[in-house]
Length: 328
Image (cartoon, rainbow, N blue to C red; front, side):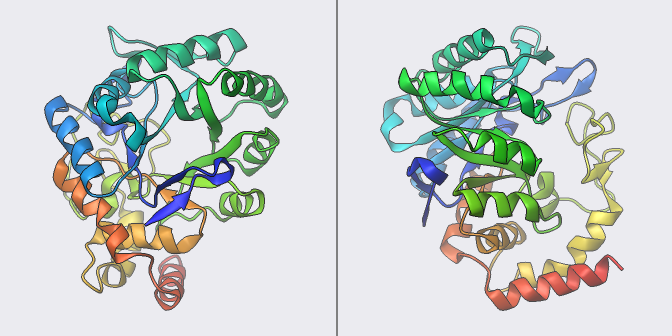
């Protein structure tokens, strides 16, 4: 099962793999922005397992694990680079040695240097999709960033670009660029994003779905009494934007919404995660879910959503009805 990576015309698997978690720990001041400890050998095995199960699209960022995610992905796929499509991101600054985030930078010279650094970590001559990772960049700065990205396309260092932003106006402004192919935004069955879907459908962009499993809530692993560790981005020291977990525990609000639709999502032999991904596949022909992973078993389950395919229109309508009722 494949989809087009927006206006780039590149064919990718309908389910991609998000490589944030395999970056391991990283921090902004004392706030965790990683997913806790990670086993690099298991990460490599999981990437290979994803490819063996039909996954061709991998989404990472230079800041994930302060460069570590790119390094693990790069060394693993180096011998089969022509079989995979790699997306990475730029705009956040960090110290790789201390795994500390230090700020952001979208100046032209920095974008060029960040691209070269990512290419080195990925051990690749090109990045298929290069995404701005600063979601709140002022719209008046867009043309300057797009100009640099077009230069990188001309130089053969990237094939296309996009913006990781939840703001429809910003995504629309970026799409003025000739080689803009995508927008990446938060969306899952518990938290829809109709304005971003509309922009993607209207402008022919791929809609990369960040948080497709609600930061793990839709994996089925967590209950009301689950507690995440302190070095996990979902733990007690979570950043303020964390919606699905509060004080290190699953959000009661989102657990209520999940309970309302659990039966439909797990029907027809699907796991909860596969049902959640099936909802995204049915939501729009532009959607491209990128669930995270740490183990080969997680990869196999997520990739299995392609075998089950999208939910039916009837299932989508019933989920909308149930979630509407749960919100009242």
